[in-house]
Length: 221
Image 1: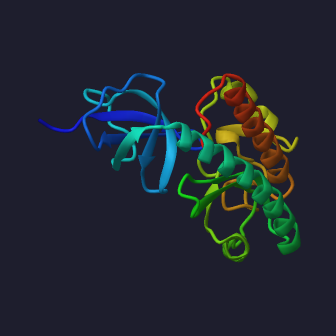
Image 2 (image 1 turned 60 degrees about the vertical axis):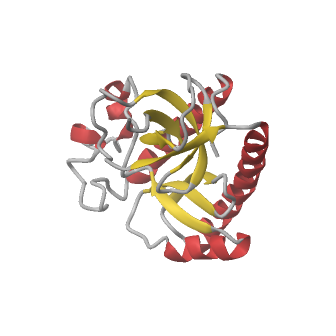
């Protein structure tokens, strides 16, 4: 008999993945679980069995190790507080390096060895020195998750596409880009409007995270 697989929601970016149970156990929707995936060891929220579900864009299947314990949740709380301090440090370093990045969040994974910097890149840049400096200062392996490359699909996203433009004629048409001035960014934006779009998305993600915390979702680190 093959091991059971489940769909699990994890990470501050709201990822969805398939995870195979390491040992037989009775899991229920909404359980806080510990999973090991490509990013490392972290908490997740179990949604449902994966059998018979549509295939996900990412074929990777991680490990569902166990239902989260009180110690796991306490560790996640500490890592979340640690991540908040690191996020402020990342903002200072971003300004010092003069990078076209807007820092949204920084999550430290459950293992305490890896971290993910969630940021909006609104212009070409090399974030390597920033990630290396953060890692050296805090003893972590820090990776960048560029939210501008993989924006979430909000229910009312189409109603707000016009808000991401720069005000020029035809600006904002298409997938939120700038038809009249789209040559200034590697993401289809422009130097005159992409910073504003980054701020709009940063505000959106901040609001989304606040809603998750308000509804007492699993404290994802």
